[in-house]
Each structure stands twice: as structure tokens, then as C-alpha cells.
Length: 152
Image (cartoon, rainbow, N blue to C red):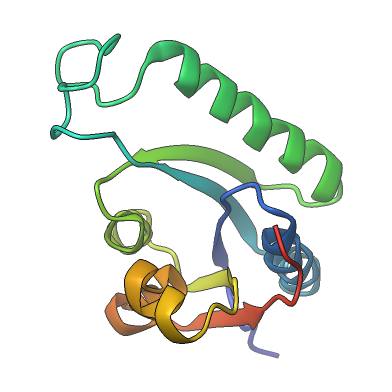
């Protein structure tokens, strides 16, 4: 029997609504024996990489922020994926969350992305845009989008 996926990427912004994607990815990973990578995209404020106070030259993220984000991803991995053998975490620095997710997925050989959409509509969606929608358009692999009705 062929498996659906071998390498799942789950982006999280640590919101309540992103838990839906974590749960779905866990189920898929267990059923398929897949590797899971949990990622968070850090968006530097203002100037391109290196322009934010407290940054190492060209690194793009303050050391304390990076350590805090990695710790949170590791906590999620332990608590929500205890029975998944191959799990990895990563913090991506990108001015565009969608582009960062897609580029990382391609570089890491991901064959399936699971992401939650916040379900914004109308004017707020027009202003903010949808990271999930952009990931679907740009990704080289299948993307499972789950609409969360939770308000963060």
C-alpha cells in the first residue's frame, strides 16, 4: 500500500487555530510513518535582515527571540507528537511567511504541507491576505488547508 506522505511540514503561528493543523499532521504522520517538521516564520520588522536592533549582522532574528521560538516549537513537538519518531523544528526568517514556508518546504524535500487558515473574509482578508492561500498557490507539493473557526 502506498503512503500519502513521507515528509510533512506544519507551519504554526502558535495561535489557537493552528492547533487544528497540528492535530491533522499528527494523524497523518502516525498513519503514514511520516517525518514531521514544525516551522515558525519570523518576520523581521522594518528593514531587511540585519536592520532590526539587537541582531547579529545578517542573521535576521535576535538571539533571545530565536531561542524562545525554538523552545516553543520543541514543547509542541514533545506534547503533540510524542509517538512520531522523526520530528524536526525550524525557525524560518522571511519577509513573506508564505514564501518562507514554500522555499523551506522545497529545500527540505517536503511532500505535504498542512496549514490552518484563520478564515478571515472581506476587507480584513484583502488587507492582510491569506498566508494559507499563498502557500497553496506557490507550493510544489499538495497542501491541506483547514479552516479554523477559533478566534485568536
